[in-house]
Length: 331
Image 1 (cartoon, rainbow, N blue to C red):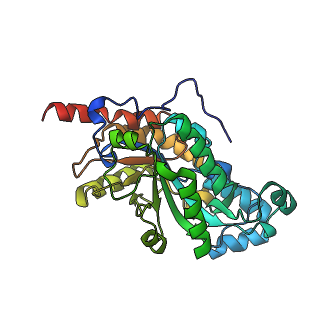
Image 2 (cartoon, helix red, strand yellow):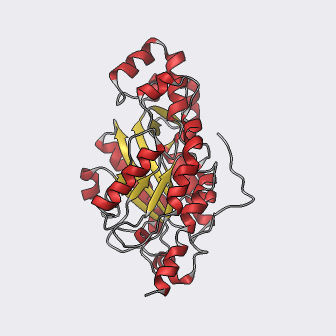
């Protein structure tokens, strides 16, 4: 896990926006986000998830010492921990939550000593993370107390093997942890209102049954992604979606993340997701710089990327909000 350079950060960028933008709905602002936000702490001793392909699971059982390091190289999409991502300016977090049976994992005794036996919810991206959901959320809560004018959007999705009781326990933990900091979906969120009410957390929950039972949860936020390892195809896909479909009425995410396939992995044994991303990021950032937030059909809102701390990604996205000032001045 790498740590960010805290000498120059965007830790309080929302509170530093021009006053003219304080009354702009958050879904009309440009907001930087991280794809698979927790993948910086994947566990190389973890088995491959049952949601992955049968072939990958079979190979994992056959040769875990080969398969798991390979999965780790391609499933790791972030290098910075949550506080460092927050300091860098990330305000949207892609949280993929999975049930983990710790009795069947490596170093079981150590896990039982360091965690309560009911802490079975972890994050996952092909394999499980080392950090639990509770640990990550509590870290966010501490950071938010120190930055009371910053608002985060937590997208809880891709649930794996969660029982109904675990869903309920997770929502209960979230509501108890953040309490009045939660911004309900019944309101249009904008910064000045959030500040007045002390609201700092928007929870998107991708489970319809749970969603209908808890009015404090927001529905699934659309996530546009190209499912390609080619940055040109990613850009082409996003532009086609903009023209053909247009932006969602509320929050939506444009994913700059690349997606590897079997051919890419097999034909490039020395390549990793990090190397692939870094090689492509100048092209992707050039596309970002041309975008404009706001209510227009071709506008952007949340923009997600991989390895968000290893370049100027967050600053470029945040800088797009200056274009809203030019728009306002011409009205």
